[in-house]
Amino acid sequence: MENTKLVVAKEEGYIVATINNPPANALGQPVLGDLNNLLDECLNDDTVRAIVLTGAGEKLFSAGADIKEFASIQAGNRPKISGHDLFLKIENYPKPIIAAIQGSAFGGGNELAMSCHLRILADSAKIGLPEAKLGIIPGWGGTQRLPRLIGKTRALEVILTGEPLSAEQAYEFGLVNKTVPAGQVLEEAKKLAAKMAKGAPLAIREILKAVTQGLNTTLEEGIKIEQSGTHIVFASEDAKEGSKAFLQKRTPNFQGK
Image (tube, rainbow, N blue to C red):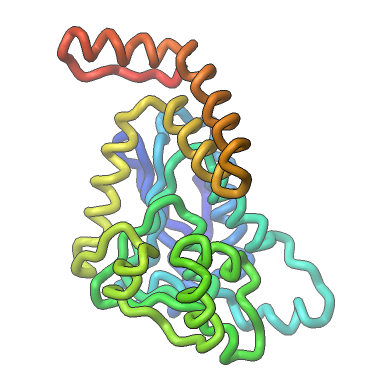
């Protein structure tokens, strides 16, 4: 995988992708392009069953969009890679994506983390959407994902004041799955990825689809999405393997078929 702003390391069953764009891991076009390419490359790679996304250094996961690109956008030039579209792609990705937030995440960095399926946050880090203080609004899904994750009332306070949440608040509000010391964030995320990599790929794909799409529709429509996924996985070889392994008291060997 040839990238200019991502460092990609292959592990057994998953990869670790590190945003390496000092000093703030800003999400400029090169970073967004690398992330988009990575998703495309991993989509049909059966050896990659989960992705851990992190940022280089312990100070910042990402400070957000690259302000140096604002002038071009304000002049009417459309970016080649839209953060909005990319983050939707991450949210709807059929393989688990875990954000290992070892440092603070602000603006687009927070929006990137929120688009991931799971989040591990350093207990010393802060996470927020400061756009209101810059005269703009969160433009990569922050106004929509934060209320869905922590509720409208809390989300409005965070967005309207631009004040960040502490790691303790982020966990209490349900924004992150776990908080750990900064030096343990990546290892915790890798443990999660390793567990998910052992699961049945088809089942995981349909679970992600049912939960993500179901939350954006009615309960009745969500049930229909779940039922569709159920029919798909029950007819799979992995479902047969799972039952056999259970009865034989052994670890299943899922092939994604």
